[in-house]
Amino acid sequence: MNSMTGFSENSLQENGIEFKCIAKSLNSRFLEILIKLPNNLKSNEGWIRELLQKNLSRGKVELEIFYSRAIDHHLSVSPKLIKEIKNNEKKIRSKGLDLQKISYSEILKISEISQKQLNIKSSSLKSLVRKSIDKLIDTRSAEGDSIRKDLIRLTKLMKKNISQVKKLEKKNIQKAYERINKYQKDLKVSSSEINFSEVISSLGKADINEEIVRFNSHLALVTKLLSSKKIIGKKIDFYSQEMVREANTMSSKAGIIEIKNRVVDLKSCIEKVKEHAQNIE
Image 1 (cartoon, rainbow, N blue to C red):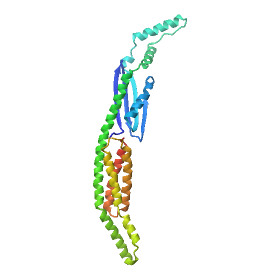
Image 2: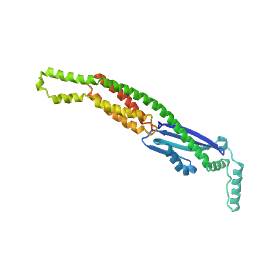
Image 3: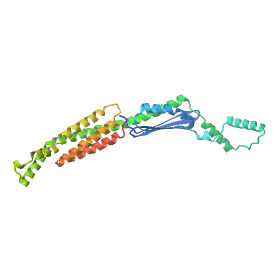
């Protein structure tokens, strides 16, 4: 099980330049990919996107690559660059054109522009990106393990609560019988005057066995999914909604406060399961 939340940061040094790759992801219903690259690396966006699509199934993923030189490189100008600038000046002057003297700050700007044209080896870039994606997957997996443990805890708690609701099922039916008998006595209705179809209907509305069976079925499927290595987030979210529906029906049919209280505990657990489902693949 993998979470959709993760973060990674990797860097490497090449030719005096530090290249850094930052990858992060948040929860999303689908896989959304945003790639930010320097202009001279934009041609690599295709294979980077394919690599992310191959390794991730859901989440809002952002991958950014940028680079920078150390401060001392910014404040220095190589003799080679100065020589090239002077040679260009001579060529231009030899053609009869007049040039103003270039200041040190302008030379630094030229140096900065030339640095921006520097590139990274294809193999180095691929290694940097792959390491960042692998680390992102590791962080998503680590959080996924924590979520799995909490989901196991919640499913066990729901099993305990629904079993207690099951034990109260007969008491709930008995409460319905008592209510009908009370109405008969209060209204002084004889047995011959009782509409038994309505009595049976009332007792049926108090029967929560069907809801308990369906709830246990959904809960069993969620428990089974927790041991799966497949993408399970959307399935757990669906079964959570179904369990909420059954819990609401049980609460509406409950004639005793004990069942209503257990259903409240069940719904509290289900809401936590739904929150987790929104953040796992």
